[in-house]
Image (cartoon, rainbow, N blue to C red):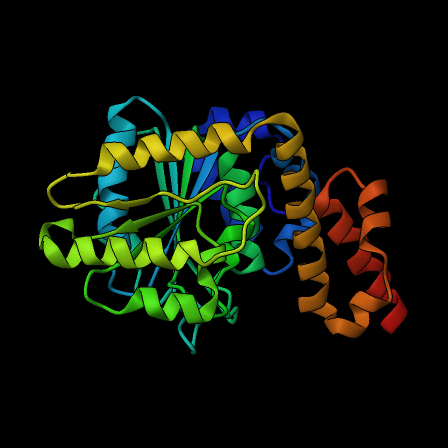
Length: 314
């Protein structure tokens, strides 16, 4: 039986934090994205808030940057949802570190909501529940920040939910060379070198990243990621970051480009969900494009393909 969570996005918006919390809890339960497919499809069909993804190696300062961005965005009067994805406990599969505890927010502020979620067993860092949570929160808030568990050669799922991806690297860590080998430079829309107060080391890191980006093959009309140095503790460079985010947002929301981007994103959600649940054999047995063409949205397509494959394999 479905939970009593309102399946109407307007009711969730009107209900404030308690309604958002109940809706997220319903989505995060086992099978929740399937049971609430209609709600999630309504969320992604509604023009929603901008989703900013923050990724980078553990310890690079993503939580500190998130804190700084929270203060700036709320200072501008915009509502904000934050999803902090943590490593998972092997015992409970819950969030191990609890990034939520490191984010400083006013509990009386009704225009900000923070959710800590576990990566579970996903190497890419985002479980299917996190995808549903992002879809829900972008329909409620002006902006959403997704702080990923950390990036390596396989941990790039944040790019499948974020409108703008920010890759954070730390001066003197050698990360830029690792990213060149891993091909990670294909992922970010913006690269930030954290801890700019380190001076010469930060400037060298910026130069290294710019060199790595120059080796990437991009289409003539593709976006060129800017490389910025900032300090979350002093605030230096944060305005430039938000300006770069807005510039990329304007670029990405050009109508034809935006339509193609949304279609590719939704197709990825569908194919990935089928592959995770049924493997490559299950994915080969269905036509995701046909399912999406007949469904109200990507989550309903996942629901229908899951039903079909469950019956077929039974």
